[in-house]
Length: 164
Image (tube, rainbow, N blue to C red; front, side, top):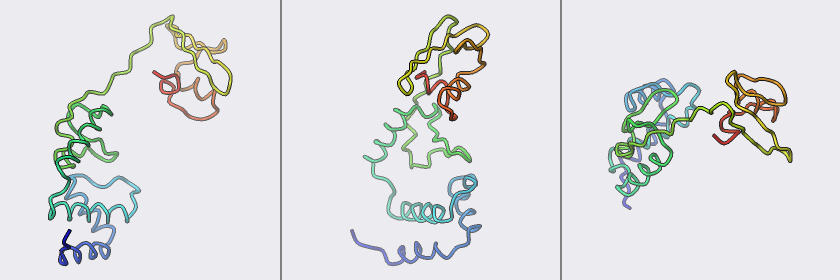
């Protein structure tokens, strides 16, 4: 691929911009401020990618199709929008998410009387779903997350821990 010296100079010049200038550029490109705490190097790379994509055509059609399929498989929201921690960036992948209309699977509420089993460190843990909450080891809990934390000693998503 032939290189474009002017484009190379512009990309190199991005490294001389202040963090505030890079953040302003991000906001202009993506329509929202960058996520809090994002490193300056990430802002430089994002600006460089956008500049090159604008001049050289961005992602190939095949890459856009693959990204759209990945978005569909992940169940990213039905509006065709990729969720960004700081904002929603619509169509920032040049249309890659546009065709992905998959709806995230809603989590089914557990019916009372359901029994959940989970093996953890060689021990089987049993949770009964009650009308008032969740029964585990003779104690009533309000959430599966509290039970998962009790079992593991670390913060876990309860529904994820129990495979729901």
